[in-house]
Amino acid sequence: MMIKPYMRQGEGDELVSPLQWTDEDMSSPDGDTPMSSHLCRAAGTNELVREMGSEDAEENDEEEEEEEGLEDDNKSKRRGPKKKRMTKARQERFRARRVKANARERSRMHGLNDALENLRSIMPCQSKTQKLSKIETLRLARNYICALSEALDGGLSTESRVFMETLCKGLSQPTSNLVAGCLQLGPAPSVGMRPEDRQNVRAPPTPLGGMVSYSSPGLPSPPYGTFDSPHLLHLRTIKGAGFENHSPHEYNTGGVGTPPYDGPPTPPMSSNLVPKQEPSPRYPPQHHYSPSPVDQGVYQTQSSYDGHSEGSYDSYHPPHMPPQHITSIYRD
DNA sequence: TAGGCCATCTGGTCCT
DNA sequence: AGGACCAGATGGCCTA
Image (cartoon, rainbow, N blue to C red):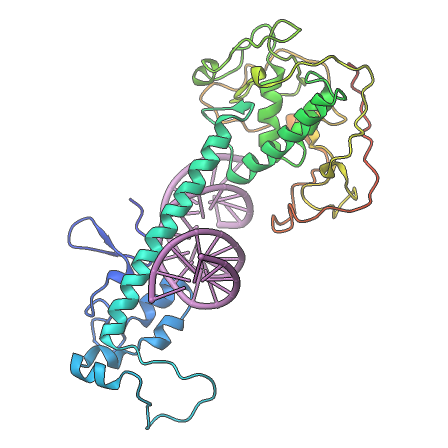
């Protein structure tokens, strides 16, 4: 159990949140520095501290009920709405509310995480060793939907390079590598994979008779997961199928300063893709994949993801930008 | 050690 | 009044 800074150790191992602190907790050992230091640390705000004066804790209940709603005569007159004094009774109510609200919020976030986990579970790429982060899960999900939509429209083969490019758009390099690794699995799907990931490998009913073969050479043998091709729709491959769909994610301003998501495809699938090679044995199964400088050279191009805050990630949709044509040396 | 990711607490706002 | 939702703040954990 993590000990949160705003918690204190209870009697046993249990942790006590500020809202469960007793009055004693709210006073420093010397007795004159009440909860302010705790709560300021806890919430990054001193609003509560302002409301909950330490003197209130000294008052007995009768005084509290009596004072509630009364004005504080001896205090200087201040503008703005008067704040009710935080009596002991109000403190208790406040704590109870806060504790309940915290629990609800926790529960809500857990629900959100569960939903995200469900989403992860249907993603085409899964790895037991490299869990997709929340943001990457959402990005990949969006890409996946876009790619499948394109495939449904018949403009994109699920085995094409463009399909993978679409999947990798805006993803971080590690995630792109994961996707690429999933797609690169050929006749010997287990080669270069971690043992725990190998069991995930399923032979998909692809026209190629195996896993979607899609690789790039510099791709080190990975902690990659599997590309769950049965998810895919295997449509006819359209020769020379360009990348000219018009879903919003394809529009970008290009170049540096491009909004995080709508930039050019993530490097691994981009212009540097080279013919497939045997996975390198230099990445032992236990080693978490970390591209060597050489490998990075293979995969690293301008990433629209890096260097941008995530704040504007999904909010930016250049309205009337022409679709980007991906230049590629790759040929189907 | 810096940076990414995460869980949690918190106060504000909106809605019922 | 109370719940849902949201965003900010904070600190722990992990990895490069």
